[in-house]
Length: 309
Image 1 (cartoon, rainbow, N blue to C red):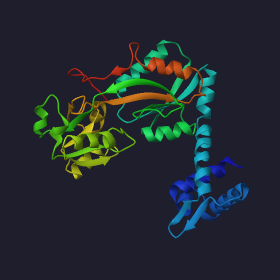
Image 2: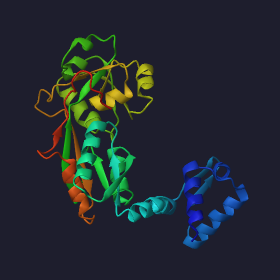
Image 3: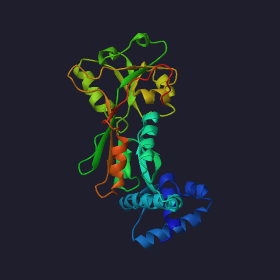
Image 4: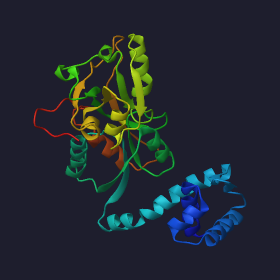
């Protein structure tokens, strides 16, 4: 099997069109079709279902695509592994969720370096759900998750972040030092979609309903378009961590929420490190160093003038 055939197949699957993939791969459509046909013949099954709109993956195609992603990721990192091996370092592919405080992460990496561990990091930004998939597929070595790790995984609790609301400059909530869920009653509130910070869509909605709060929820994946999405939805506030607010809602003030709802349930965002049971022992050392010497870190509001990201 030619590794190029796997690349051609993956690009075609992601494009959803043989003609579109041929353009991106700088090939003719007949040449790409022959390569795909040769791959299907070698594997003994149909990988792509042709349809009027292009192509879609068959069940076999989905399985091969997942495996091919892992293979190609390993191929792509080969030069980096060779370079690090020459320096006596091993590479740890580390997943990081949106909204992870940059200063906290730099300090954690600094503790690993100060301990003299011969490791280097390659960072992959992905939601908690996506990191779990990457971890199972062997495409990352350690995940930093906003959801509790699955059973069977090694874990280390690392970080607690307060949840708060980024509010518009014109909002009267700008004058508040702390908010409760009841302050959101009747407002249009943007929050992370499930898979980003799961507390938002599951625990947060149920906690608000339990207190009789009827907010108009706008659940989205937070990105560099978040402020535009909030404007189009006419959102009054966005529920997120302070680190994420600084990145995604510049110019909006972040006000913390009460740490618990009326029922005593936590409204804070937790971060765990997770890694497979068969992973090398240095991952446990890294996770221990990522956790502060006195235990999991609680990120509080910074002093005036400090920058957070």
